[in-house]
Amino acid sequence: CGQCVAYCPTGALAIRNDVDKVYKAIEEGKYVIGMVAPAVRASLQEEFGLEDDMAAAGRMVSLLKMIGFKKVFDVAFAADLVTYEEAHEFIERLEKGEKLPQFTSCCPGWVKFAEQYYPEYLANLSSVKSPQMALGAIIKKFYAKEIGVDPKDIVLVSIMPCTAKKFEAEREEFNGDVDIVLTTREVVKIIKSTGIDIRMVEPEPFDRPFGLSSQSGLSFGKSGGVLGSVVNVINEIIGIKNIETKQISEGVRLITIELSNGKVVKGIAVFGLGNTRKIVDSIKAGELDVDIVEVMACNYGCIGGGGQPYPNDVRTREKRAKILREVQSIDVLISPTENFHMLQLYERYLNKPLSHEAHEVIHTHYKHRRRVQEEEIDILPLPEESED
Ligand code: SF4
Image (cartoon, rainbow, N blue to C red):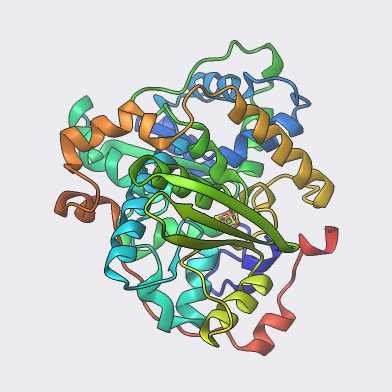
């Protein structure tokens, strides 16, 4: 994303190539596990001319296994988990009337932006880790034991639409749970280098238990998905009488929810850091009164991420959103609360939402960071933006 490239002073700016690290881990006999973000499958379908092929994600799973991945999981599973936890966190804050509005925290481009420009709102960010980092922690802490593999021998490869996720995986608070982050462009390179026509490959489902996801989990790939998923869980827990949505401007959508207890809750889904700045400034000035805010740094959300194949323009993003909606529509689970493997994870390890155990493994904290000087921002390249 041009936006997060512009605001990222971390080195994620330099578009790194981590493909060789994956081949090295396979050659060294490491237990290589892949996990694939929702937005990646939409652009893979488009990249390989598989727009109407609902089994495209399964073909990618097979191909990754052919080159030496032992397991391939779905990050949409972790999106269900994160939503479930985040919805409980939001309900608790509503009841206590504190740390509102709650901001989502699954986009590292936005988290970094908040750490640099809005430190006064860091306590308002959901403390739940992003799906990538939550699944990384669960695999290294619990799954490794279950399969009898030393976590040191596991190399966890996250396949993301996003260059900022490379930086996120390296943040010291995450203890290196995710070892390598590949962008969609890098995984396309791997698939092409096999010389195998992906259309000819028999699809294989994502591995269990972290291969199961709901329509909500998959919706994390585009703007509005996280907020919509949280609303789904709130509906299960409290009940919702009525929902109204209103497009305020390009990239800003307001949602007004009447809960069954009579309370009215307002949420905003915003994409693009320019839009985000305006929204947060309005909240700060007391001009905008909302309870929950979903922020995605990239236009249209992760489907427009900086690691996605080119072109990454408006038309392509709309096409990816359509593919993702179609992929979602064939998923039989609607809400995260129906994901029984996620619920099992609570029974076995996490106890219940917001428990001490859940805080230990899938929550994090944020810190105030040095600001990028405005002059630095002006001279940074914005490769994707020029294509819009
Ligand atoms: Fe990454 Fe998605 Fe955030 Fe863009 S919107 S920076 S792709 S997490």
